[in-house]
Image 1: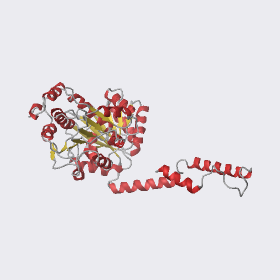
Image 2: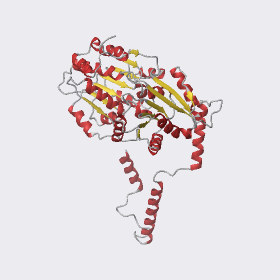
Image 3: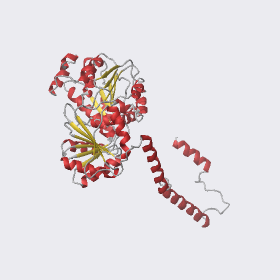
Image 4: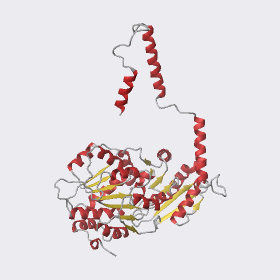
Length: 463
């Protein structure tokens, strides 16, 4: 087994690694660091919790410190893109720790907080920038963030970064950075489609995989419980209280669902916080800190918000709703059983989710035990499970019926606009009837603006 010294890292970095208590690199680190140090593009896949962040942070620190820029003013030489604020903050913390004996500056930028402090630090100069795409593009468009000197680009959690929700942002970022660069893609999972898309950004990459693609951590004990959808909140409360679980991460599909479940748990006497994109950065940090120090017993999160969560020795993960994308299941349960620890992942499955469960089992190559908790047996569980297409059609029909029952929605502020228009018309009529003008045949006052001129000036302002 190689040691970190065998990888060719500098003495100062080795000292920082030793300070953290590490002597032997993980498999992903041992395989990814050498090609990165050689300047190769890398496409790396590893299970969550195997140390893949250090797999790109360590060689970047080595390259930038051993080959300092000639320009006195610090320029951004390494850019690390992540899908979430939490993951960005976690990577920044790793850079601080591993670069503690180096003279490199790093900065993390993301939305949800004021931009001015970030702009001031950018102007002061940084070597390594960790960012989420939205805030980065905003600052680039304001011309306060110069990416023209980037030598190394990293896309972390690349499956999500290159997914449909982020691909356009990534392409826009590419317009700001040099075409001649080193590009690294790190993630827990890679679909064949993602590998195809990644060819747009990488040149003759070295592919590194340390486990079978899309497999789950071996130390995660997986199980699933059958139940009706309306009993999920009650079953969740029951399982937590029955097992006396003190630290549980729960995944929901939607932000509103996360809020509702968190409220239900708090009412049941189980301290809980929700974390998702609608929460302010301060609220997200307080919730995460409370979960880490055990003042919050349950953290309810959406998939995107949970990317980058790194909780040591997290024992329990619950899939309150199964993800439509099977690969997201791997990311979810990868929050537990990290760094050699064991953990438990439980999924709550209603009749309409049976097809998703089969998809997950096919992806990970194993059967998940399907259990029934006494008192929570589902009323709806026919012998034949509905297909995914049947579930989607039923959902679409249900939404259509809800819209019909609700009726057409009034445009936002339409009532106030109509009221304002009505008041304006009445005032105009009042002025005419009270002789406010020069009579019915009088000319408009000099202050009036002809309709055509008003429309054209309004159009110019809108542009």
